[in-house]
Image (cartoon, rainbow, N blue to C red):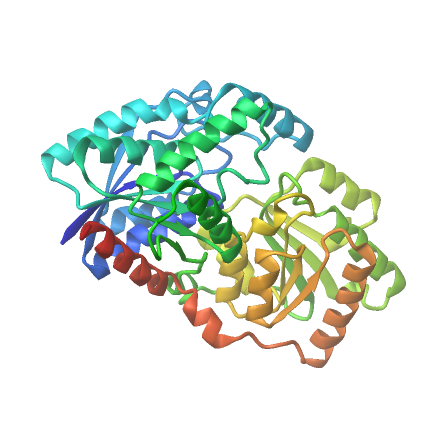
Length: 428
């Protein structure tokens, strides 16, 4: 089998959406002739941990090598769960971090990761290096190891780098330094993978500005996806006779449940006869301010909060819902976002209410077909969608998903495409 070094800062036992994509790639790569070794960190403090996902990796007998790192998570006890800060605090801390650390506050992981990667390569040489970003420091690790060993490297973009809507540049110098780092990564990489066409177009544009001949097919799209095995044999957690609207995941930055809550309140107030048949379930982490808003709107009796649960438990809740909903905020760069949550939703083939702007998430929802797409801040439009949804649910006439599209985004199918790209990179 060919050998690939997978550089991934976020990896089980860490939870949340950032670990899902690379974990599933690692799980299925051996089926396509690639033996992965994962280079990651000893987990410090983090918002959530998922031992079940870690057990899945261990049962796959994938070698996972952990190193130390000098980054802010080391301020907390090892594997300690850190509370999600209020959005105002998160933005303040993020702005400080982005001013002090380039490309991100995980840059203190680069040196120990490179040192360990070189030692691993000396034991048994790798054929390719695969780095998943963010954090963008992972790409620096891959580039440095590639320069010292001559092994080609591939970068997987889960978010854009230079135009990431969640990144602010305190000064033009900060942006310039990021641009230089990314330019080196793009020009020296064997290939780049991105999760959607919008990010792909940005990367291609920058690459063409850096090189008159960047090479054909250097940047490929491998969308987010779902794992069919995650859904198989799972018993749903549901209550019969009620229209269950479910959100799974966290809220941060421009993503907020507040517009949905206000629309739901208006819908219930205008349709009191429907109220006993409606419940909204939040699986994951919800801001305290949003919980307070729901209370003030009189929604407490209609809402269930599960708190953070394992990925396996979250899927059981998702399978028990009638309607899945998600949101991407409005603002600069939000058109680049297509969350992993959305594609896991699609794996269930359940109808989805997407509160999203024009962009990648809307593009995916339109291809999926079983969806209602509404501007995220348009409370009246969300209200009208809830009316349509309730009537469809009551009459048993909810829309059906595009099964062909759902098959395309299955994790094992996507890993097969990744393996072909790694084959080509190894042959360079």
